[in-house]
Length: 562
Image 1 (cartoon, rainbow, N blue to C red):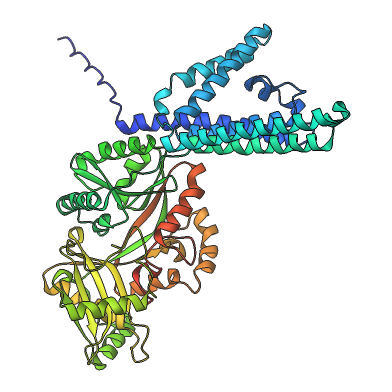
Image 2 (tube, one colour; image 1 turned 135 degrees about the horizontal axis):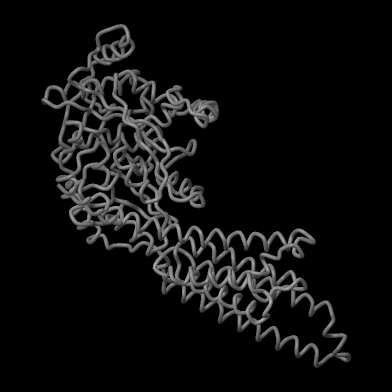
């Protein structure tokens, strides 16, 4: 009997994420090579004698000989640095300029007839880059082109006036040759060189900058938010998913999925993870990456969940541990036992003070109680806007926010002294903390008021037949508590502990522990290393960080300290 033929190997199917990753690699390689050449050129200007050793640089940049003036070399190097920036962001103009420069270089070497190897190398680089044009889809905006054109027109006009003024000075001088060598002419030449360089930088910077996000009209933005709400209600349910509906976010729709994001400083900041069917995850993320690439944006994800990390990593992004979110199992929580002594005392102390906690739907709240809550909230955060990007909703009493719950704690006279707002979280069969406030303008408010409010809410969740309550976020908890013991963690731990002194970063982990929570790790997902600093600044600004540059609910985004 003849053996059965071996099954044919199935063809390897390239996913959209693989294609996106390849395009990013092209941009990274091209930009880093050009960046290295630009840095070499600047060093050659600054370090005397270095230029004579940069044979490789002369092989790649055309027209530069050992006798080239330093100013010309500096201009070329600045152009290369700006081209590297444009190449990394996928700008078509930077790609075109680089291909042309490489082509001219190859032609220069060929015309010499002796530099065969440099000519072949540079020509191969030019052909390789030219065939990768799909990796550079970003076109300059009309606004950038208009600004660049206007600046160039002004520069030409200034040049015409300067030349005319110098001509008048020379023609009216008794000795024209002496006038041409005068300090005035030298000064004008130096100033014009500096101005030319500044104009060149501005023009290339504008033309190579990321595109701005399209701003929607208020009515259109609200319409898209409600469209996103339908997706969240059908496919959401994670403790952070409802925060996709923040007013300062935009929404990118793919199939039945939505990605909540905000573009700030050329960074597309995503939070929470995309919401939709699991089967659409890779397609959704690939479409967002294409959308960001077409605008020259880098990508960062705040508070990413573990189950999304494989998708992010496959697209070439890197994740960094950020901290842990606390979730209480309300069905098993108890105040009994020695470990809960301080929490039990706080609850009893608040009860003896005549305080009661009631629960309300914010959309049907009594107007008088609503005004009390708003007044107390404004006082406790000193009139500032709600802070946070990933873990707060940013508003109170929006009539479209269905399913929210308010825990309101009042004293014996009915004065509102604390409240918490909770958003629905079907994944834990319960609620997730949005914002908490405690009165700070009265001396008779007892300690432990927030503790008592949370304990009452835990009991309410259990009484309604639900299970989970999502609490605060503890930044770098595992590192601070020694649960992570890698080399980097060992080095970072003493620094983080010193930075956390006197901030809620140190206290929120201990505060959450009182409720015996489970911990869910969260991550920051970042783009390539060259974007890390810019993304960290944008992320810190979005989260409203005011104490140290880390992200989470430990700042005023969730209210005052318990």
